Length: 149
Image (cartoon, rainbow, N blue to C red; front, side, top):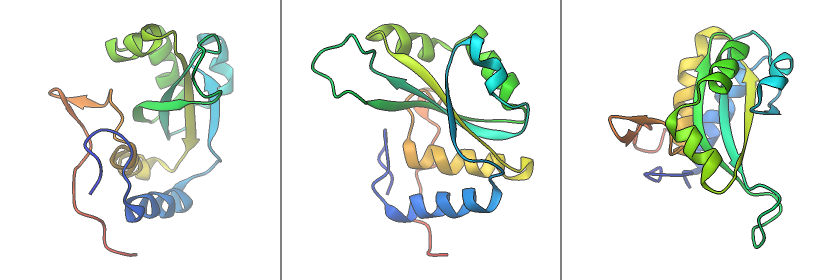
């Protein structure tokens, strides 16, 4: 069963996501800092994305590379959604950015349009990001382990 908040430890969930991405992705995962200046690095094609917080370099006592997936989404046009997040960040994103001076990265992968809803849902199930809230609860579909493919 996936964890209520955070990454699932169930291998079958990750395998289901990996198989689905392999079937529907049209690019590899890419990352850009969530800053408007990077808009030309994001395509205007459909895909899924994850916004990750990473500890700013100025913090002592943290591992040099510590990322946390804060939000997962889907987009008919990744560039438009990227700009939405840059110009109108959700309160959860603002808190993530200012809490401990986190830097936010926008990880994305282009996918066939008909698959983005299912891929987003699978990724939310795997990662349980804290800002994907619906009515105050994580949007993940807490469900039994998927059957082997």
